[in-house]
Amino acid sequence: MRSPDGIRPVDTLVQNVYDPTRRDRPGRSGVVKIVWFLKRAEHLTQQEFEDWWLERHVPVARVAPGLRRYVVNLPGRDDLAGKPAGDCEWDGVAEQWFDDDDALNAAYSRPVASDVRADTLAHVSRLERLIVRELEIDLPADA
Image (cartoon, rainbow, N blue to C red; front, side, top):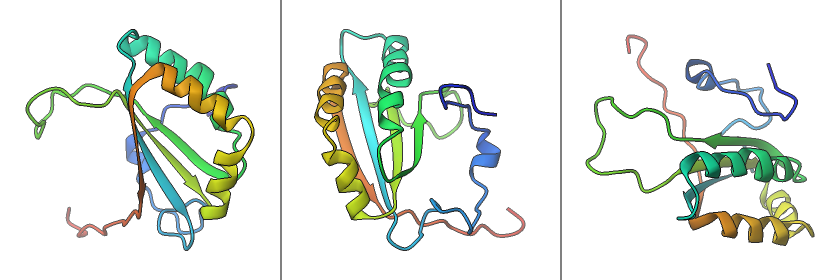
C-alpha cells in the first residue's frame, strides 16, 4: 500500500519477482537505469540525511518526466555473513529507470533540475552516478 507521499517499504522477497510485462523491467530494450551513490554532508546525521532525501528531494525527483521507476535504498542492519571489513562508504543508493536516453536527458534538462542538483549538493559530500545494464540471472530450481 502506498502512503500519500508515494513512499512505501518494499518486501525484499517480493521486490525480486521478475515480471516480463512490467514497463520498467530491467533488460527492456532501450531502458536506461541509473544507480546513484550518495554520501551525506558531514553536518548531517544519517537520520537528517534520510529526512531530507525522503521529504524534500523525492517529492521533486519522483515527478520527473519520463521517470518510470525510482527506488531509494537506505542502510539497514549489517550483522550478517559476508560483510567487508570497515564501514560502508555510502549513506544511500538510488535507482532510476527511464524509457531511453531522450527521456533521461529531458528529465535532467528541465528547469527545476538545476535547483534540485544545487539542493542535492548542499546535502551530500560525495555523489557518484553509474549508468548500468542490469542482467537478471536465473537461479537453479533447487537454490
